[in-house]
Length: 188
Image 1 (cartoon, one colour):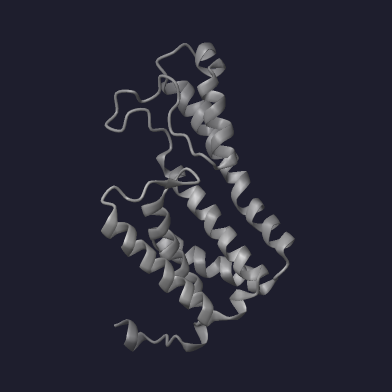
Image 2 (cartoon, rainbow, N blue to C red):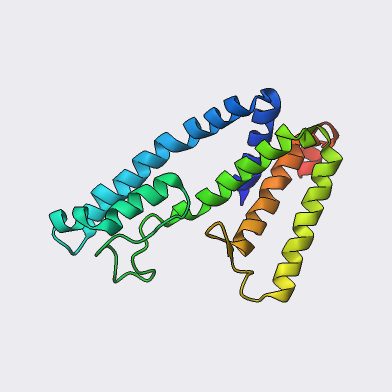
């Protein structure tokens, strides 16, 4: 969660420092894609190739292996299984489970881009209202659906809402930075 708070703060600052949508998108792609491509290829070829129960030539030629690589590089939908890899683990077939947050992070980037392009970031009270609305919707889903509200864009709605709330806390911290008192006494 703290990652999403920090991300909300820094991504909001990034857009407001240079409110050019294309520059913002290029920065986000350059920030995310090189490391993601390396991590996905490492997971699929090195880890998967070493851990699979299949012969490497069969493993690497299976459509599931290519699907793991392409889906995860495209972020939507994130895939966790590779053929014959970690099938006996407590979370069977889960390879690089940390990728699950990426669609939510990309959604959050898009949220800031949309708020910036529509100039809503310049109206921080409206962002605060939107935050309150998201929190309200989150409580409604939790109260009315014990299973978490289903999925949206391949993401569990419950997790999406929870992490967007945390992301927006960071965004609001940046937007209201002039009113936030930072002191060792307050921290203590």
